[in-house]
Image (tube, rainbow, N blue to C red):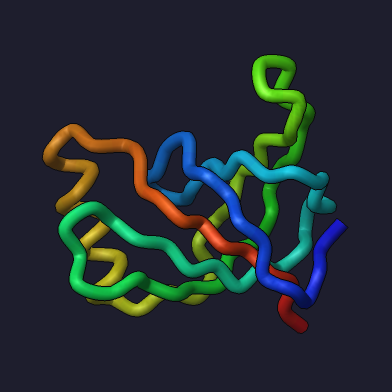
Amino acid sequence: MASDRPISADTKDIGGGVRLIVAEAHKPGAMLAIELSLPGAAMPMSFVGKVVWCAPSPQSGQFEAGIQFVRIDAKDQQAILRYVANGETRASGGVPRGVD
């Protein structure tokens, strides 16, 4: 369930969206404000994402959620594309919280 309070999450992969490992389920369609740090970036990026799917993760006992980028600054999107083009698929510090 989405919340207004920031929560900590790990990323499993990133590309055209992001897959997060979260402690609680988020309903598909929920909009989340997310702060994410790419290795080597001076500052974290912030964006709004839409939960596309969410399922239990048998390996971790938590949940995996597929997040589609909805509102993201063009420079942040380009930074993600460069990051993925270099063969990277993990970032750190996904911090989703519910938005209206």
